[in-house]
Image (tube, rainbow, N blue to C red):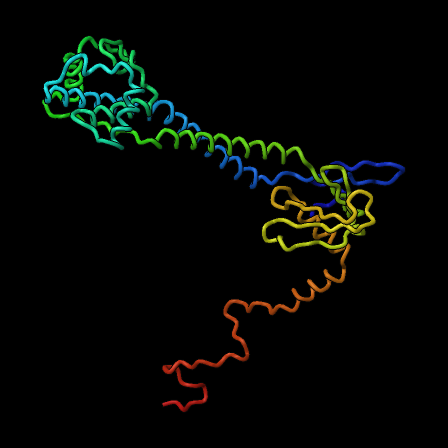
Length: 326
């Protein structure tokens, strides 16, 4: 513990009535704890940004590309069945048509090109593009910025888009599942929410300060209450291994009587040293027992030392000192 008389690390000394009076020592937030929490918060905020970009740009873009490919599949089905007309290719009410196709799938089953139409409309619904005037009607100004004049012209345009320069089929976009975008929003909410909470926690912890007067062993809590060793009924150290302890206060204390004051020993330094000093002053018998137990522990033998009770090991190649010489 730092010297309270000189005020080292805790504040400057002041003089009054010809005698030096040490200013109370002040706690500080543990740099190790704060650094770890800030790193975790930054990582979580990074996940939040990543999730936001995926939810608003990456996944919708992938879904729109997949919808284009599925539209091409639907138009190909119509052409193969010789049904490629504006009346069959244009979907005037995509929301109602999607509902009808889903009901048919569960009932009588889908016919002709309806399976391809269903997966196309479902993909448009996942990316929020289930709009006739921008995605399914003919003619239309497509939401991608393309003018669609006819069903056959649309089929030819999509055929070029999904054919490589060498004439082979281009890479097929992977369609979205129903959970892809919602999961990204969950990642966004979790990353931003928990990250912001941790930064707020750091700010709240920094706003609290403990004070300690070594001369009289008095601990002042952040709320202004104070405790001296004579106020302690017990120091509950059952959670000491988790850097927590609870000060059990005697009933006679004016503000904390009969209560337990839980202290976080990890976040604030050097509160742990102050608590141990107060415990030694309040319970000298307990401190003597602890010292006695520590003194009863056998000291570890020095490196290379041999215990007197250890058996002697004789090297068979080395004759004993009293053996006759050959």
